[in-house]
Length: 118
Image (tube, rainbow, N blue to C red; front, side):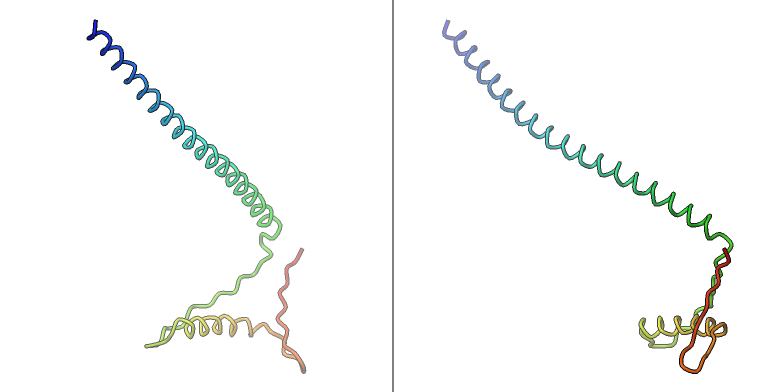
């Protein structure tokens, strides 16, 4: 009889421990599920934003296709012990020199006109 009572007490203790573990598991599952739902919502919002940006990009490409002139210039050779800022300045100057061929120099100002035919 005593053995049965001890067995019942042991079973109830194990059930109590299992119930506590189940509650802990449910809390962890709820937190993970909430985080998953939040990330899923962010992903959908980002996907919608990317689709909108792609549509806007395509619309701009169709609008200006063939009407944009791109000036390009090869970068100059990098000098020995030249800083990054100095090299970047020389690169900007090289494209500026190419654009200067198309500039109109007036008495008081210099104008670079970019024509985009409609």
